[in-house]
Image (tube, rainbow, N blue to C red; front, side, top):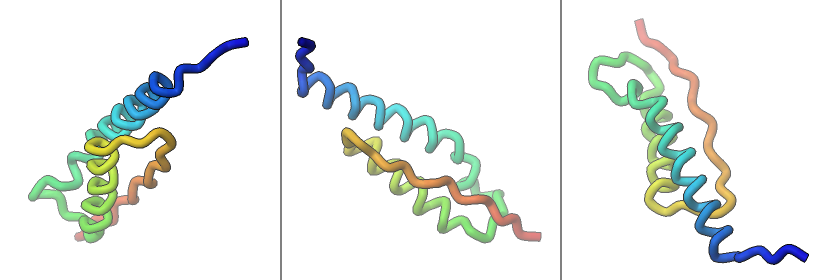
Length: 74
C-alpha cells in the first residue's frame, strides 16, 4: 500500500496554487497600465485582487477566477 505524506501533499498543492496564480496575474499585467482604455478596468482589478490573495495565501484546492474579457473604449 502506498502511504501519502499529507503535509508534503499539502505543500505541493499550495505551491501549485501560488505558481498558477502568478502565471495568471502576469498575463493580465497590461490591464492596469495607465494608458489602457478599457471600460471594465474594475473587473480586472477585482480579478487581480483574487489572484494576489491566492499568491499571498495559497490554498490546497483553489478555484481560480475567470479572466474578464476587456471592453475597449473608443
